[in-house]
Image (tube, rainbow, N blue to C red):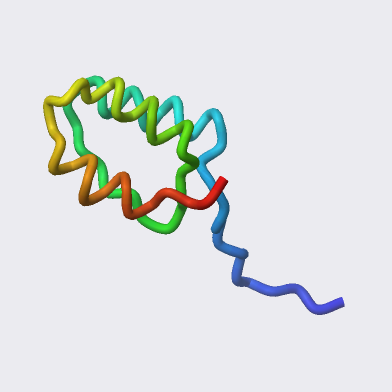
Length: 70
């Protein structure tokens, strides 16, 4: 067997645990960059609810660009 020292990158959508952590950061006022992992339309809706219109630019630039078709 050949063992690779390189791990596969997680290229799916946010898991429930990761998404809860992301929402917690956004609720505290942080605006993290969403790099490498997509989000579903339902998750984007929850982020929009948490933002409550406070930061539409963050939603349009960061969140909408990471929505995957699900």
